[in-house]
Length: 138
Image (cartoon, rainbow, N blue to C red; front, side, top):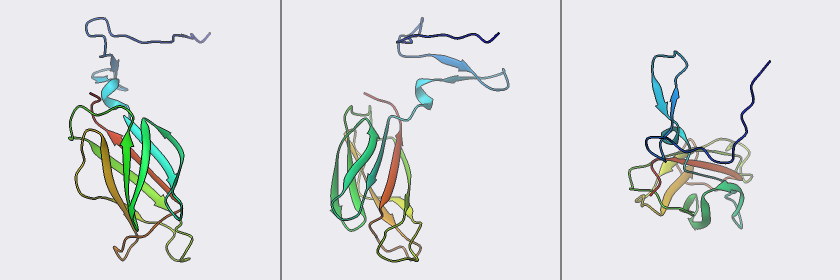
């Protein structure tokens, strides 16, 4: 029979905001909070931009063609974060179906800037853009 645990809040015993999880090989531990995405945002980056779904994202700004800014609802502890993402289908040119996400300008504790481009390294707006941010929350 499988066990089931139902809780609303998990709190570490030694440190309230720190819970260790035993790794797959049973020989190492991983800090649960360190492994969680601190912010993610999926949005339409073409025409009038709009957030499709998000977590810890308070807003989105269109800086220019293929250049965006995502604001965090809750700040990170430092600008030492990692941003990754993907983009698909710009809708304007049939051969630009996939692109890359790149860093743009500076990352602060309140927001991240990033670009979307296609294989010729030209900035382009895409219909489905998604980013995720890893780091520590303040």
